[in-house]
Amino acid sequence: MKELVEYVAGRLVDQPDAVKVSESVKDDTLMFELRVAKEDLGKVIGRQGRTARAMRSLLSAAAGKRNKQARLEIVE
Image 1 (cartoon, one colour):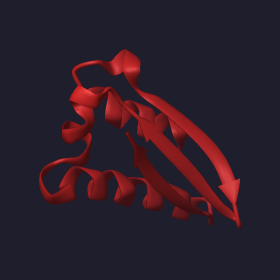
Image 2 (tube, rainbow, N blue to C red):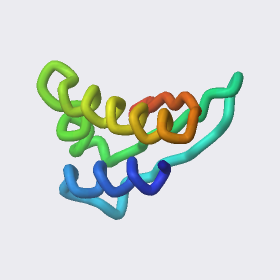
Image 3 (tube, rainbow, N blue to C red):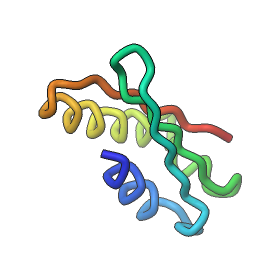
Image 4 (cartoon, helix red, strand yellow):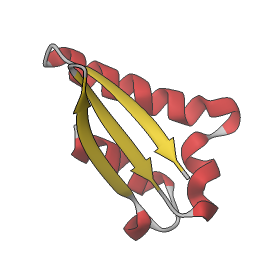
């Protein structure tokens, strides 16, 4: 699932080398932190958060197939 987040975010931004995803587990939930270059932050979030919401939906669907829960946080 980490690779999924990296792949999607890497395709959205101008600086794909700056995309970093870290994974951790907190209370039976997989937590993913996405970091991108400051210039690309708006592209990952999208208008009114639509792109970020879509990425979270994809992540939730992938986690659901494995009977897990997942959260995505976009960090500046």
